Structure formats: C-alpha cells, structure tokens
Length: 276
Ligand SMILES: N[C@@H](CCC[C@H](N)C(=O)O)C(=O)O
Image: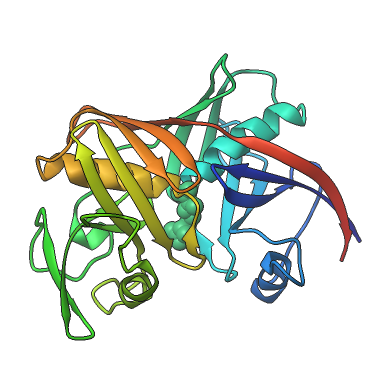
C-alpha cells in the first residue's frame, strides 16, 4: 500500500504528517517506532494523523503519536503544522480552523505573515487532571528522584507538564533529570519535563525533555506550560517570548481561567510516499 505524507517542523520539532481524510492509514505502535527512527526510518519526534471531524461543528480531528508509538492528546508545534498542512493540501480554504484532539477542541488562525496562532485552551492546574499524585494543588511541588529534590510547577495543557526553574538552560542536566521525572511515580501517565531560565518577566529560555520522544528542539505545549507556571509563580508577565533551542515562540496568557495563545512558525519540508 502506498502512503503519501509530508515532513514538517515547528522550530525543529519535526513531524510526519498524514492526510487521513483522503487516505485510510493505520500504523501499529511498532510501525510508528520504525518510521520515527532517524537511521532506519523517516525520522520524526511525532506522527500527526489528520482525520475527518468527529463532531459536526469541527473542521477536522487530529491524532498525535510520539516517536515511541504512544498516542497522546496535545502537541502545540504539531497544531501549527497541522493548520499549515490542511491549507497547503487544499483540505480547507479558510484561515480560521476548528479542530478536535483527544484533549478537546482548539481554534487555530493562519496569520498573514505565515505564522500560526493557536488558542490552546485554559491551563489546568488540578493535580488529578494532570495527572499528578498530590494531596492538594500547589504552585510548586517537591519531587524526590534518585536522592535529589526537585522543585517544579505542574500543569495540564491537554497533556502533562512539569517545569523546573534553572540558572542556565545550557548547563541544565536535562539528560539525567528529564528521564527521571518523565516516568516518575508521582506522574502516573508520565510527564513532559521543562527546564526554564527566566531572563525577565517577558523573556525566558526553555529546554524540554518530552515524554515518549526525548529532548526535542522545541515543545509548543511545553512553552505554554512554562509561561502558565511561571506566571502563577509570580515570575512572568502576560506576554512572554520563549527562546527554545530551535527558535522563538510568543505566548500570551491573561491568567487563571482564561485561554492561552501561542504564536509561531510552521514549516513544510517535503512531500513523500512510502510503500508499507
Ligand atoms: N512536541 C509537542 C508535544 C508532543 C506530545 C508530548 N511528547 C506528550 O507526550 O505529551 C508540542 O509541541 O507540544
């Protein structure tokens, strides 16, 4: 069977994107791992499957799979690439796109300058919804891992995130702490781990060790999580520039109860066909 796909990226967080509106593709978790392999496959952090809407009031549904084959419910950079993809492929001709994921509904806007703005919904700090094992909601949790104590904020952006503040992202021990917290027992469904350096209330640097994919060049939902957590901890303002290894995002959040907006680029790299 021949499968058409596009390779895309958002700030170097890269995706294999499949139009499952006009095709009928199913991949097992093992097949996804094989395709995600950077030596033996196409190579990507996440696979995005664009599907017809599940709800009549939506334009599309889209599914997200990590490189390890696990299906997840949110991907910020993927959402921007999804919006570019459906326009590029002529699946829609509007600049406002309504889409559902496992996490719920989102609204995306294709801007005139080529950037994409995503309304990521309301950040959810309730531990049970993240999910995080905790007696009550806190701005900072103390988590013990391998004899070390980590202070981190936690939030669901539709997917679970914890964020640690560091002095310098260049020297942060992402390779050790990332995997320790990713599968920590306090996070029963795993967690994406952000390392945030606050330069000013309007400017942070961020590295993210992603659940199911390892450290990526950028994590959109991770950037949203860092700004939401930094703001409730009193460190950040309402309009923040986030510098990730792969480039820059703009995150705007008016505070608890309001939806958060992310703006950034989405690039198409090439189209391909594989025989599976
Ligand atoms: N790269 C993404 C997040 C992808 C999913 C994540 N690894 C998870 O398991 O929740 C982004 O840009 O948000």
